[in-house]
Image (tube, rainbow, N blue to C red):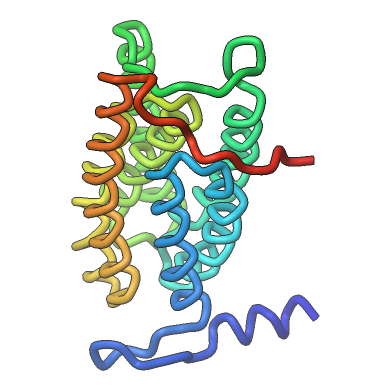
Length: 218
């Protein structure tokens, strides 16, 4: 059953830019756009949609030989669960979690973690896999992990990490002939700019906007 599903996900759905596009990439495109749009609105449903999205992209990236990005999706599932819990229960006294700025101590921790992750992932990819793009794959993986953590904590600067990662992802996916995914990340880039503006507006006026209510996960 699982093999049949994977075969279907890897089968051609459409041909984009002269390159076959799989069902996994096409569905990843749709769920990815929906997920980021929900993050911009601070709707908690972004987390389950995001988990579905990363599972689809895991198939896409593994097939394309982007091994770090593929394994990154496993971590995203765990971070998705963490973020879902944080947004539901992580505020003060279990109230709504609010947007805030990243502290100096957090920036130091994020920078140290980013350098360590990039170096470790690059080493593994360069010496133990057939990756043809070990450094950009490692760098985008580290940036994405840090950005997802920041998103889970509603750190407004997490959008800058996403923007930086997207600026690298777009040409990387084009190089790998994942043109639909490259377009998806171009759309992500635009949504990240909107998200940054919306979260900064709430940071300046915390009583001026209220996150969209959503059911608390079981």
